[in-house]
Length: 375
Image 1: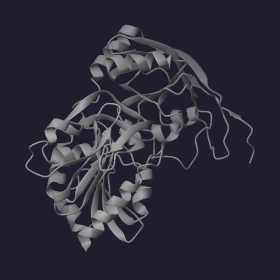
Image 2: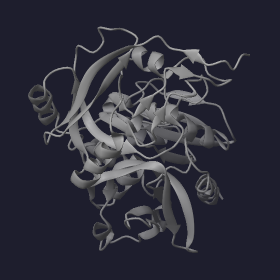
Image 3: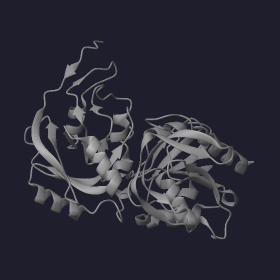
Image 4: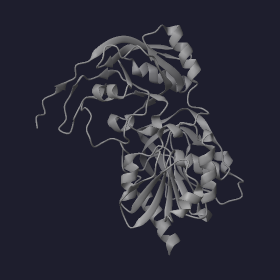
C-alpha cells in the first residue's frame, strides 16, 4: 500500500460564521461540489481541545445539534478510515478548523475528510481564526451560530432563531429505532441508546452480550429481557428535555445494577431528584484532570458535555449518595454512586475514543456490581 499523499479535489467558497451575539468569523466553505454552500447551517458552537481523533469526534452522536470548532490548527491530515467511527454517520451540523488539509496520508485511510463530510452534507468551514473564536466562546459561553455565504445580519437572525440545545430533546434524532444484539461475554447487559458510541459497546462486549435498545423502551420491556445490568449511554442535548428516560430509570433503580456515562450520568441524577444545569462552554477534549476521591488519584480524561449535575441538588434526597469524582479545573461533579440502589455513573468517557485510557477500570466496577448482585 502506497503512503503517497492523496489529494482531494475541492471547491473553496468565501463564507462566515456569525454568532447570535453578532460576532463574525470569516473563512472558506470547503466541499466537493461548488453548489453545496447555498444553504446556511445553524447550530450551537462549541470547541474541542483534542489534538487527534477528529474522526471519532465528528461521529460522536453527542454532538448532534452542534457545530464543532477544533482548537488544534490542522485537520484532515490522515484522512478517514473504516475502523474509527463512533456511529454510522456524523451527527454534528458542521466542523470549523484553522487549516483543512486537502491532502491526506495514512496506511489505513480510505478517503479524505472533505469527501466524507460532503457525503453526509456536513459543512466544513476552514481558514477561521479558531483561537479568537475559542476565546470568544470561553468569554461568552457556547452560542448558537450560523455558517453561510449570506450577509451577516441574515446569519445572525438565523443563529438567534436556533436557540442552542437548551430544552431540546436531541436524543430522538440519534437513538436506534430498533433493538439489536451484540455478541460478547457471559453476562447480559441492556444498553439504552441515547446516542451510544461504538467504543463503549466494544468495552461492554468484552464481558457481556448486549441488547442495544431505543431510548423510548419501557422499564417493563427492559426487565423482561432479564439483564444482569443496564447501561445508560452518552447522548446529545439537554437532559431535562428527556423526561421519558428519567421515568424509565426510576422504575429500573433498585431492580437491576445500573452504570451511566455522560448523558446517562445526568439522567441518573435527575432520576433520584437532583438537578442539571447548562455550563458556560462545557467540557470537550481529551485532557481533563479528574480526581477519584476514594484515593485522590488523578485521571486524565476524555470529555464531551455541555450540561452537568448540580452538586447542591444531591443533598437531602433521602437516599445515600456518594460523590466519587471531581473535575480539578472547575470542581464539576464527574461521578457519583448510589450504594443502596446498585447504581453509579460517570460524567466523562472512560472508553475514551479518542483519548487516554486511565479510566477504563470503571467497566470492571460495573462487572463487579453485576456479579455481586447475582451472587
